[in-house]
Image (cartoon, rainbow over all chains, first blue to last red; front, side, top):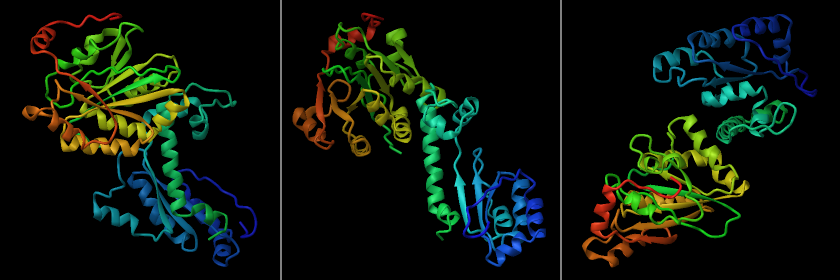
Length: 169
Length: 214
């Protein structure tokens, strides 16, 4: 996006990120980023699997001029091979990100209840239905989700992501 | 995270609309101490209004729940289902006071969870007033935990309980030493429970509690 216009965001499914970045390169978008015409911020959400970590090396050639953040999404109790320094270095030293974000694990019951309710996390915390009527969700589960959201907000504030997206860097 | 290996806290929740504070004290402070002081406290319970509802948070060696049948639920706070079963129920504004009996193993878990999910703030918002009855045993870990609790939840009413029978603080030196040890705790209001006469205690330990409403 041009630096002085509104921003736009896009979500890419797992395994397709390399192809999307290649397409952005081929249409000249990455050259425009390099020329300063656009700012490009990439949040690369990693899963705790080798296949996901392999994507880091695929992405590396395309993000040299981007604000590139590695997002460790803790969907379970694994820790991205931090217990094995050799393996950890093998994947995480292939690129120099602008920062790392950690999305903590949300307990399974809370997550599943949000899924069942079919509302955004914030609506669940507010104990509302999709139509805005009062719901009857467990305070314990809402509390867990609220705390989880607060931790994510702290992470975003820590790397000043919103300032970056708003062009206040 | 609060850590206290050898203390016990009993939290009593009362609806805001009730003006009087009634104390319902169930367990001794120290791990491994005589469990039979639990039923002694039952005799302190008034006959009117009806016996309170409660939660026994020790899933391994429950003592409170087995004595009070259907009115007290045994919950396991180590899993989310147990947390929901207890905490969501505590926040129901049904004008019925409730008791939570926390064993030392569940003490840290409960107060850590309460802090994480904002339990005490929610309780206030729903017109429920939590009251913590903190059983003193004189141990350094106990006093440290009491101060951490006071610092973490400064707006929560807390009573310091000295159960002479379950956790005598004075020993041979008596009242003076007990008061010195209690002075090491935060300056909460105090509640003292005298020790049962030995003969009564032995008789009590052989009987099964039958209380109104059980």
